[in-house]
Length: 93
Figure 1 (cartoon, rainbow, N blue to C red):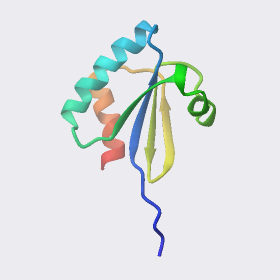
Figure 2: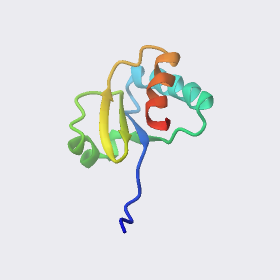
Figure 3: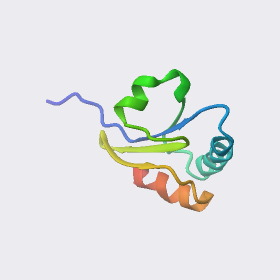
Protein backbone atom coordinates (compact mmCIF):
# COMPACT_ATOMS: atom_id res chain seq x y z
CA UNK A 1 0.00 0.00 0.00
CA UNK A 2 1.32 3.45 -0.95
CA UNK A 3 1.35 5.85 2.00
CA UNK A 4 2.50 8.85 -0.01
CA UNK A 5 0.33 11.92 0.51
CA UNK A 6 -1.04 13.57 -2.61
CA UNK A 7 -0.14 17.24 -2.70
CA UNK A 8 -2.28 19.82 -4.47
CA UNK A 9 -1.16 23.35 -3.69
CA UNK A 10 -0.05 26.70 -4.98
CA UNK A 11 3.15 28.33 -3.82
CA UNK A 12 3.34 32.11 -4.18
CA UNK A 13 6.93 33.31 -4.22
CA UNK A 14 7.84 36.94 -3.68
CA UNK A 15 10.39 39.34 -2.25
CA UNK A 16 9.34 42.12 0.15
CA UNK A 17 10.82 45.00 -1.87
CA UNK A 18 9.09 43.96 -5.12
CA UNK A 19 6.21 46.36 -5.83
CA UNK A 20 4.61 44.01 -8.34
CA UNK A 21 4.77 41.26 -5.72
CA UNK A 22 2.79 43.39 -3.27
CA UNK A 23 0.00 43.90 -5.81
CA UNK A 24 0.06 40.22 -6.83
CA UNK A 25 -0.16 39.21 -3.17
CA UNK A 26 -3.27 41.33 -2.67
CA UNK A 27 -4.84 39.82 -5.80
CA UNK A 28 -4.09 36.31 -4.51
CA UNK A 29 -5.64 37.15 -1.13
CA UNK A 30 -8.90 38.02 -2.91
CA UNK A 31 -8.71 34.89 -5.09
CA UNK A 32 -8.17 32.81 -1.94
CA UNK A 33 -11.35 34.28 -0.42
CA UNK A 34 -13.26 33.06 -3.48
CA UNK A 35 -11.66 29.59 -3.18
CA UNK A 36 -11.10 29.03 0.55
CA UNK A 37 -10.31 25.33 0.00
CA UNK A 38 -7.33 26.11 -2.24
CA UNK A 39 -4.03 25.39 -0.53
CA UNK A 40 -1.83 28.48 -0.92
CA UNK A 41 1.59 28.96 0.64
CA UNK A 42 3.41 32.28 0.55
CA UNK A 43 7.20 32.11 0.51
CA UNK A 44 9.70 34.97 0.74
CA UNK A 45 12.41 33.89 -1.71
CA UNK A 46 15.05 35.81 0.24
CA UNK A 47 14.82 32.94 2.74
CA UNK A 48 14.12 30.05 0.36
CA UNK A 49 17.06 29.70 -2.00
CA UNK A 50 16.55 25.92 -2.21
CA UNK A 51 12.96 26.39 -3.38
CA UNK A 52 14.07 28.88 -6.04
CA UNK A 53 16.64 26.40 -7.30
CA UNK A 54 14.32 23.38 -7.13
CA UNK A 55 11.63 25.06 -9.24
CA UNK A 56 14.06 27.16 -11.31
CA UNK A 57 12.21 30.37 -10.51
CA UNK A 58 13.31 33.04 -12.96
CA UNK A 59 11.67 36.11 -11.41
CA UNK A 60 9.15 37.24 -8.83
CA UNK A 61 6.29 37.21 -8.35
CA UNK A 62 5.82 33.57 -9.31
CA UNK A 63 2.88 31.27 -8.62
CA UNK A 64 3.82 27.59 -8.69
CA UNK A 65 0.93 25.18 -9.24
CA UNK A 66 1.32 21.62 -7.97
CA UNK A 67 -1.31 18.95 -8.59
CA UNK A 68 -0.97 15.28 -7.67
CA UNK A 69 2.60 15.98 -6.50
CA UNK A 70 3.58 17.27 -9.97
CA UNK A 71 4.51 20.77 -11.06
CA UNK A 72 1.88 21.75 -13.61
CA UNK A 73 2.81 25.38 -14.22
CA UNK A 74 4.82 28.38 -13.09
CA UNK A 75 2.94 31.65 -13.58
CA UNK A 76 4.79 34.95 -13.75
CA UNK A 77 2.01 37.20 -15.11
CA UNK A 78 -0.80 37.80 -12.61
CA UNK A 79 -3.33 39.22 -15.08
CA UNK A 80 -6.40 39.66 -12.87
CA UNK A 81 -8.21 38.23 -9.87
CA UNK A 82 -10.57 36.15 -12.09
CA UNK A 83 -7.51 34.76 -13.91
CA UNK A 84 -5.93 33.77 -10.58
CA UNK A 85 -9.18 32.17 -9.41
CA UNK A 86 -9.19 30.08 -12.61
CA UNK A 87 -5.57 29.06 -11.99
CA UNK A 88 -6.26 28.04 -8.39
CA UNK A 89 -9.25 26.00 -9.56
CA UNK A 90 -6.80 23.85 -11.52
CA UNK A 91 -5.38 22.49 -8.25
CA UNK A 92 -8.68 22.17 -6.39
CA UNK A 93 -10.78 20.31 -8.97
